[in-house]
Length: 384
Image 1 (cartoon, one colour):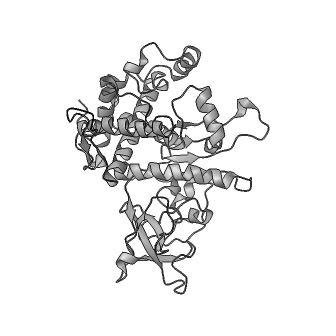
Image 2 (cartoon, rainbow, N blue to C red):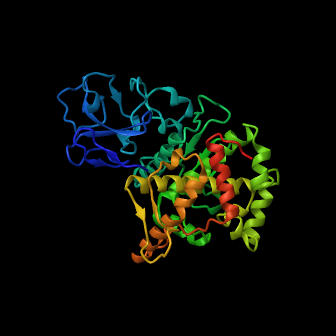
Image 3 (cartoon, rainbow, N blue to C red):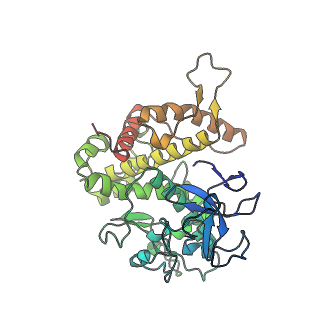
């Protein structure tokens, strides 16, 4: 994630900010430019303060000499979104998060128009949980926009468009009826309990995972969606099988085998996680998630001008200044060469604070080859 700046006062601002801490200008994220915009109240209420509510129209301060007004996503009214509608949208219509067919009303931003089922906001604590889910989802969409990946709603593609459901578990507490996080032909379900830090940590320990995060869930599940779009539907299945294995194997049987027997011995040599050993689909989705982890974290390092130059190393094998755009990198070699020194540094920083490693994974040559495939796939490069 890159750093942003307020166009009014040049103060650094961050992706989730809604106001500038220096000049109090309203901030909105523009999906077209993938940038944060400082805003002045528009013509609907010229007397409104710059730090006022998200309702009404707004004008970017960088274009005071003219330009169309901008409107906030309807979900800004729930304090779960700070994105602007695409330029030219009027912001009119009846916002309705309950149906993907309503994504064409012009009231939702590029990210929120993919929502289908949101939490019951009448239930205590659900608004806060939804806000956590949306924060992770919007960070996912930042990466998808930076990579210029196709994004179709259910209204645009009724059979396979991308849809998000955030349901709660049934109130009766029956374990067999718990909501399962997963993907099904474009429908991504993230169980609401995943937004509860205690519950998520409990599941992480029970399932023996290195870590379990909301953003990781979104990145993994959208990997299944893009397997459909970029592999299956784009005619790249054979090339993908040559790297990730046979996806035609029975998925249900593979899942049962994994939960009964665990990962095979020596899995760390070829798979980025134990869950990736389950099936070729899960290997692809786990590797896809790690690709997004890597490029986005590297972009953060670049934004801060981070350099790694350990004084105790005799050669320059771990010396690196992060000065390239990982989202635009032509070769994955450049990305992976930067990733090793950065992870050594940040893992050591975490240990100094008594925290687990930020990135507790090892990228072997076999795993790097799979990441190379993902890089070529998202950048439309030859796959072999």
